[in-house]
Length: 62
Image 1 (tube, rainbow, N blue to C red):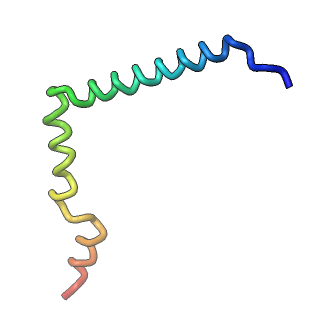
Image 2 (image 1 turned 45 degrees about the horizontal axis):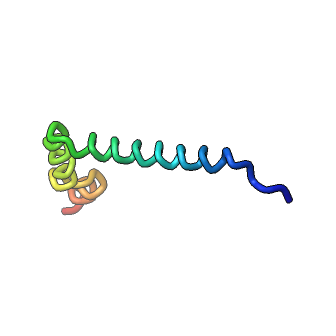
């Protein structure tokens, strides 16, 4: 079995750094103040209406 080429260590390291920077960038983008109103509105969505299936069954009951 031949030893691994040393260049793969650099490629792997560069890939990991790139993935870390991408994660941190997405995290910073998501936590910006600009997005707070949108996220708050989406968080309240499940509590605004009954699901359509429950509403249909309630209407059918006497």
